[in-house]
Each structure stands twice: as structure tokens, then as C-alpha cells.
Image (cartoon, rainbow, N blue to C red; front, top):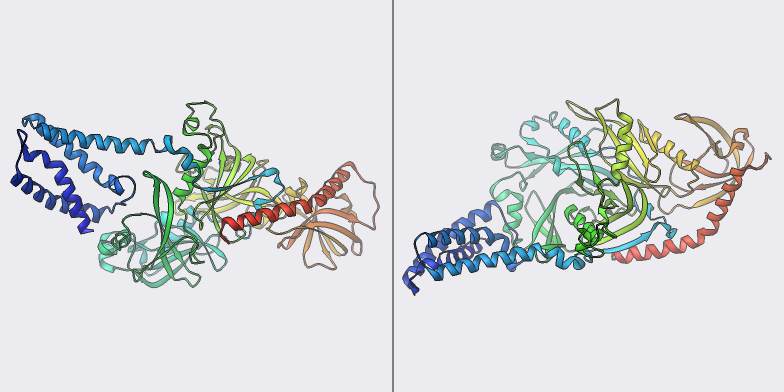
Length: 626
């Protein structure tokens, strides 16, 4: 790093002060050497300080030096021109400064024209698989439903802060940074995790190490946060000098890559690491692609580098959110050209899709993606796509960006309400409770229906408090809000059953037929809607039947022989989508005829859809490199 600083100091000295060695067009060797040696020493010192305080990434144009040399060259050239104009009629020196400024202008123009001139290349960087909603393939099963997140980042931050004040006065030395809270699956369960950071320089100088980290249960809003200590972590973002994490990694030779997405992760054995993604631009100063993942031991400082396809199984990070947003933005905007995306060719902006905006409590029109897990256990960045119209709250599709893969995107073409519309729907229920609001929009595929799950918190002086949870159907914007996840899920499933949704709740489940004898039957009511629960002689699950769909269930008794169709999921209570009581003969209504016809059509299409599902699975496996 010192050698680099000396080299850059010499370049600046030579380029900025060369004209001083020339007077009346003559060349003065002695003056040239003195000025440039002095400039090299001064410039080397200045650049050493800059590199130490603000480690730059040597990437992009001019062999990665443009970002570093821009301001020194510009300032030096302007100062030299002013001096020349003020009294020293040095034509050679003035020409040199003009040449340098022209070079800077060319560099700026090169960067500014990257998108207009290379839109096609940017559009093609991600490897996108496009799936139509009419394909018959239930790709929404790709989103995991075993881990429903009740705790958003605001509530996790409040719970983490609460525990800080209860552990041996650690709260007076360390703190939890909200930006460092990240979701991770540990031993099959979702947690928010954040390290204990130093509050300031004086706290760091007194302790020198961080004792550990905090884990907040993301699936249970009423679980207490847990603190794990005894680790003595030295290399932290809040440490100083050689123990400052970025400086430590930079000093180990990672100067020609961009270091980003510093994430604190732990293994299933709860050993902590920092994971850092290295990226490089491929088109001028843009078009970043993933290069490698650095895993840094915060205790020893040891760094291990892993390329794509070689990541340890416990890591849940590789694709930074910034890069994922860029990939989706380029893919959605530049299908035709940059000029079309900006409306210069057609004000309609033909075939342009943009990421949906979500207005949270403290920020508006924020472009962001949501971190979710697939049914395969792999992490994804999720976002809806919509039209460029600022007033549009409808979907043109959704995207899933693989986190552990370099550039894999699944684009599902579908319609429905976007995340902001779902958030507005839930918030509209609390017009009389201004302190309650939806805090996050987490997508799931429930019975093959895109469903937004939204935790509702109340804001108090001591932080956020969980109140309820909402399920919003993306197609209809129907919202179910209940105090517990179990209640909300049961009512939402009942709503889907009444809408004749016969798709599986979890990935890989299929519709099954069952002939059985009723052993027990009971009526239950949830949110004013009644249903009947059945226990059958040859099954270990409870079956829920809607009397609105199947009136004959009301007169069903123990020992009756029935036939049912249901989605075979891992739930304790399974929704019935076809019901026949062989001991009771009633006339068939029009609604039942339509239901039987749809069930028959579904059965007929099952084999065709299975072939489509297999074809899709094979394609996704190839994309993931399996």
C-alpha cells in the first residue's frame, strides 16, 4: 500500500508540476528533478493517508486508477492554469494542463455513456429464466413456507437493545447496529443476528475486543433475544487502526476488487465469521459481477477466499442486495434499449419493468429487495416488478435472485397487487390506531397463491412491540389479520378453500383421494366462519371441511363412510377440496357440479403439469450448477 502511494504521488507530482520546469519554452532538468522529487514525497504522504483512512478500490477505467486520480489531477490542473494565467506565460505548461482536463472529460464521458452505449450488455449479464403464470407450473412453491417470519428488523432491533441492558453493563460499552442485523437459518430455524460493536473510540481503546453477538428469533415474536459471549473478536467495523475490518482485509492485498456486503454470520455450531463479497466491473466503471466470497475470522483475522460453487453450506450471503437490484433493474429496463427505458423513443416506455417501491415508516419510495428462503433451503432476493408509472400498484411479475449463485434470476410473469398495495391494505385497518402499522412485506407461496405476510407492530417509547400478523392475497388484496400466525394461517387457508384453490401449501405436495370412516367430527368457528374438523380411521391428520362448499358435512356423523380429496401437506390440519358422504344422498346443486367439474379437470391436467414441473426442475438444477 505504501509503494502504491509513492507511485501515485510521483504521477501527481509529474503531471501537476511539469509546467513549472519550463520557462520560455526551455527545459530545466535540475528544476524538474527537484520539483518532482519533492512532489513525490509530499504526494506519497498524502496518498498514504488517503489509502489508510479511505481505502479505495482500484477498479474500472484507467486500469482502476480513475477514481483515485480524478480529484488530484483536476485540482492540480486548475491551480496550475490559474498560476499560468496570472503571470507566467508558459505555453507548454498550459497545454499540458488542458490535455489533462480533456483526459478527465473523456473519462467522465466514458462512465456517463456506459448505460446508453452498453444497455444490451448490461441487460444480458444476469442469466434469467422466464416462467409464465399460465404454464401450469406452481413455481411459487419455490418460496419456503416452513419459516414464516413474524419478527421484522425494527422489532428485532428493539429486542436486541432490550437485552443489552440486562447483561453485565455491556450496554455501556457495546451497541447493536441496526444495519448489521441480518437473517440467517441456523440449525433449521430463522434468526436475526448482529455482533456487539464498540460505541466509540474510547470504548474500543479500553476493551480492544468484542465479547460476542445477539440472536433474535425471527419466527417467534414472543421469544426472548439471546446473547452469546466469550469470543474476544478483534476485527470489527467499529474497531480502529489495524483491527478495523475493512482496513485489515484491504491490507492483505484485496485492493483491485470492490469489497461489499460485510455480513456477520455464524455456523450451526455458533462460531462467528464475517463474510465479504468481492466484485469487479465488467463495463467501464459499471456492470459489476461477483468475484469471490471472503470469510474472515473476527478472532484471528484469518481470511479464506471462496469462488462461486465452492461456498461453505452455512453461508447465506454472496449476492449483495445492491448488485441484485442492479441486475433486476437492467433486465427490466433495457429489454429494448436505454433510449426506450428513458422514454426518448416512446413515452409509453414499451416493455419496461421496474422494481416495486415500498414506503416504510421512515423512508419513502425506497427501492429494496426482500431476503427470503426457498423450499430448497437456498436464500433469494425477492421483488415485484411493475410498470414505470409512479401511481401503479399492480404487478407485471415477480423475480427471485439467487443469493449463493453469481447471476441466476427467476422471472415469473403474473399479475396482482404489489408489496406497497399489500402494505396499504393492512395499514387501512388501523386508521383508528396510528401507532400500529405493517413493518415488512414478506412474500410466500401459499396454496400456489402469492401471499404477502406482514407483521404489525406498535411503536412505543421503549421500541417496537408485536401486535398481529397479516396475510394478504396478491390477486385479490384480501387481507386476514389475526393476533397469532396459527389463527391467521387457518383463516387464510379457509378463505382460499372457499375460492376453490386446490393447490399444495408446501413444495412437492399433491392432491390425494381418501376413502375412510368418520371416527370423530366437530364444528368450530374462526372469525365468524364455521368449519367442521374430521378425524378419520386411517389417517393421522385432521381434515377441515367448509360447510359453505359442502353442506352435507353438517349432517355427517361418526361411522359414516366418506370420500375426500385434499392437498397432502405437512400441516396438522388439512383443507378438504372435495367431499362425498356415501351414507347421505342429496341432490347436487349447481355449485357442486361446477366444483366436481373443476376437480375432474384438475385431475386430467395433473400428469401434464407434472411433466412441466420436471422440465422446470431440470432447468433450475442446471442453473444452480447441481
